[in-house]
Structures are given as C-alpha cells and as structure tokens.
Figure 1: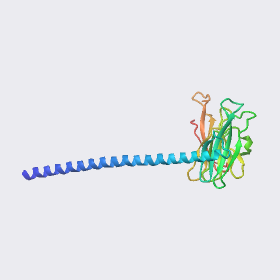
Figure 2: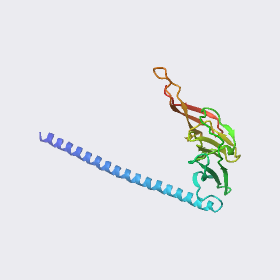
Figure 3: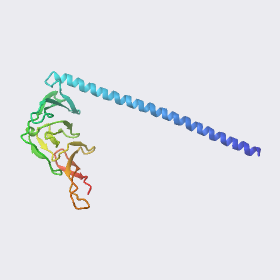
Figure 4: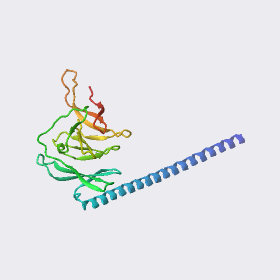
Length: 241
C-alpha cells in the first residue's frame, strides 16, 4: 500500500510539473507572439512612414517643375508616378471637377501632363458588360477620380463618374497615348495577382420573376475581367434567380 501511495504521489507531482511547464511555455509563446506583432507593426509603420516621406519629397521637387501644389499622388511603381489634380469646378455638375492627370517618368526624370478631362456633351447611362473595350481618345475622358498602374504593362487604368450614376473606365497606353474605353459602369475592383488582368464591376438589371410571374426588378453585380489590351476574358454574373 505504501508503494502504491508513493507512485500515485509521484504521478501527481509529474502531472503538476507538466502542467506548470506547459503554462510557462504558453505564456512565453504568448509574450513572444505579442513582441513579434509589435515588431512587425513597428516595421510596417516605418515602411509606411518612409513611403509617405518619399512621396512628399517627390511632390515637393516636382512642384518646382510644374506640378500643381494641389496635386495628389495616386499610384506609382519603379518607372512611373501618377498624380491627379482637381483644376476647377465642372460646369455640368456642382460636385464634379475638371481634372488633370500628370505622369512622372523616373528614368527620363520628366514630368508631363497626360490629359485634362473635358466637359461632356451629354450623359451616358447604362453600358453593357462582357464585351471588348472600344477605342476612343484622351478628349473623350470626362472625369477621373482614381488611377491605377497595371502591374505588368506600361498602362494606366483611370475611372470617373460624370453622369451621377455610372463610373466610366479607360485603359491608357503610357507610351502610345492611346485610349480604350471599357464596357463597364461601376469602376475598378483590382488586378489579378498572377496575370495582371484588371477586374471591373458593373451593375445589370434583374431579369427574374417572382412566384406570381411578375418581374423582381432591381439590379445585381457583374464582375468582368480584361487583359491590358481591353480584351474580355471572363465574367461572373451575381444575379439570383
């Protein structure tokens, strides 16, 4: 009986030691994780601060060669920096602006005004999705609210709304200055990681009917993918019928 009690006591002691060791390791790992997260956050903040400082320094230097003081840095890579400036209020809408887009080439060290948006003659409403882009001119661009550089091509995707409803988007070749208008109406979503395709969003009107046979009405989202040449790749229609 004494031997059994001793073994049980020894077992209990071993279990207790095991639990204490596990608890210490857990706390230690937790502290390490918190310290790691703190270090990662500090590194991230430092990188962001460095990028902001770099952009600010670039803007300051470009102001001396023609970039407006009110221009905002929009996007950049190793070759280009893109800036958008709201020049003045547009006549067609009190909330719209005539906007200029500037491109700085790091290799040539040249700043150029790529375009200034023009006042539209009329309003364009719904544009269908799922078709290839169509050729147009820089003067056909009436609004720019955002600009994004393609990841693997010297091209720019710009979007803007000038009719209070649709967001029109264009692919601009930065070398040729040629323009393609995408057949979408709700703007830019993002780029695919591997291919560098552009993902665009549109709305489409519902075609389904309810249990009484009446049209459901309303709209739904359509996502469309295009390559850098405006060629339609594939779409995803989110209508629930």
